[in-house]
Amino acid sequence: MYPWNKPGVGTRAYPKGGSSLTDAKTSLYPFAFPLFAKARTVYRTLRFHIPLTLQGTLTLCLALYLLIHGLANRNAYEILLGLLFSLFLAILLGVGYVLRRTCRALTPTWEIPNPVCAVDLAASHFPASGKPANVPHRALGNRAEDKPANSSLLEPVTLTQANLHRIGVIPRVPPFFRVHFEVQGTLTVGQRGVVFHAADWSLRPDDHRQGISPVSRQVTEPQEITGTLPLHLGGEFQGAGCRTLRDIFGMVRYHLPPVLHRSFPVLPAPSRKRIQLRLDPSLGLEEKRTLRSADEERYFMREYAPGDRFRDINWKTSSRLAFLVTRIAPQAQEKTRILPVAFRCFGPVKPDLWGLWALDRCKAWLIQFLWTVRKEHPEFILRVTTPLLEKELATDQETERFCEELAGYSFHSLSENGKFTYLLSTPEEVFVFSTAYDGGLSRFVGGRFDLPTHLYVTTPFRRFPGRVYGKNRIAPSPSLESSRFSLRECLREGAILFPRLLLPIPVPSASPPRPL
Image (cartoon, rainbow, N blue to C red; front, side, top):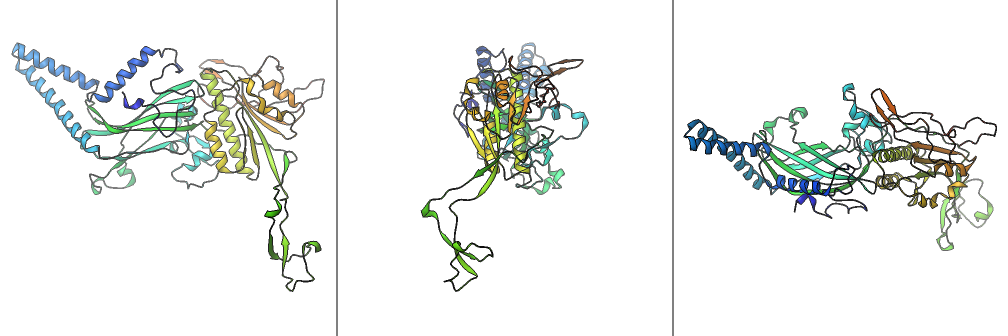
């Protein structure tokens, strides 16, 4: 069995609806039939166990042809060329075999950035500008090489500094040979969407860049391979990596055991524009009282403060007026601002690529909104409601864990909108994140009537040279009035797909406007 297709191996179990590396039934491409999947499996198996590459195989066939044809015709030149080619391949195969047996004692390490974010498609599509894209994202800021681990939230960093995988314990090899690290895996986007990804990272000597002489380092000292995994959508990645020993001529290829299996969540690519956060200070104030039982009430000594009530102190019998006995109140009189956030990921069960992209951009806006609130108002509590659960986020750790869970969310059926019922009557301002595929969005917004509502809707937008395909207005369902929503700001996120942020604007009419 091909070692990269071992089921159930990895840091996490396969999620519901996932697949292995050879599963073609859930692929996004219509031409991935079972026959092609079997042929691909056979090709990978041969590629893993046979040390000769395509160029090496052709060279071997040419050498055998020259030897046989030269011996048959008594041609010394053909015999000499055949022997030279055969000797050349034999030397490469022999050296590679010895190096493979030597490298078995070294176990490589695969350090994955935490967290892993998708690559910004727009930043990678325009390399001619020569300027890296600065992305406001706390997760990327924590993984920057020149920033401490406790860097501030939403600090702009360079995309090239993020998603840097490090492969350690790479042995040094003689000249004319190089060590590569091949990664192959699938990115599960939603319940049925699976996208195949592959990457090949080679060892890059950076001694001159760091000012270290290569002669001063020992020959047997292990090295490190760094590389990025190009993932353009958020989801759950499951894959495997293996070291590969190759020659610079492209003739031989040896896979060095062991095979490393990894599984990790991939956050959506952060947006290049900051979200506009407008909060009404007079709304959303909720009183949070922590009740304590009678046995938990304890007495403490504290310094006397002028203005203490006489029933709280016994100043007549106390000989020390500086320290008095008081009791902690059984109720903590604290008031906390709670922001209700609704993530309506309703849509088709089997979405197309445009639907997956719209949902991915909606997740990116939600993640950016959560971290923006955490930075500007750390005392707020975010109550996020999804079709699966309702969760309160009060700390940075809880927000980070929720963002990792959000990466695996997919479209849900509209019948699972029971958790959003209480938001129809809550007087606080509600922040709603949804896509154009949400068929019940108009009914939800209309149910809130004149209550304050902030709506963020993403819709796929296709653009080709000379022509534009898409709609400037969004109508999630036929029951929604076409003039209810209009486009306020267009946020261009990519070169092919342009999700748009739509905010509700009341349309002047004879009836009183209903602010959202």
